[in-house]
Length: 85
Image 1 (cartoon, one colour):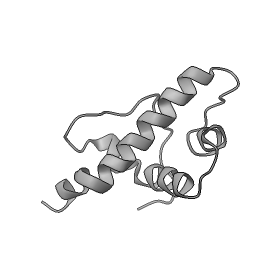
Image 2: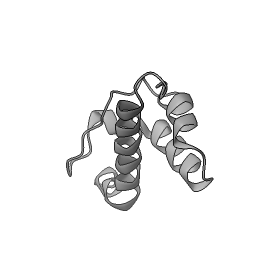
Image 3: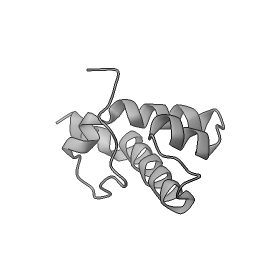
Image 4: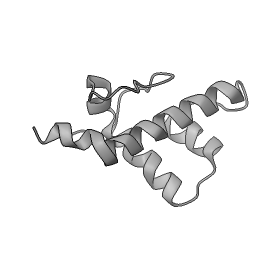
């Protein structure tokens, strides 16, 4: 597995099925989870992990950050089980 993920989309899938996007963004999800666990500012995380500029469109950057972080958390709680099949 590469240590770099492809560029993230604005909002990842939010269903109950592991997607190719999820598989290709493991590193992105891990970085988001690490940043959240360390209490990093969401704006800095959006800028460095998701390559979004929260000063240009703060609402869109926040939605993308929240959606990606939620998906990362879903992966740790539920989604990973699909990898074991």
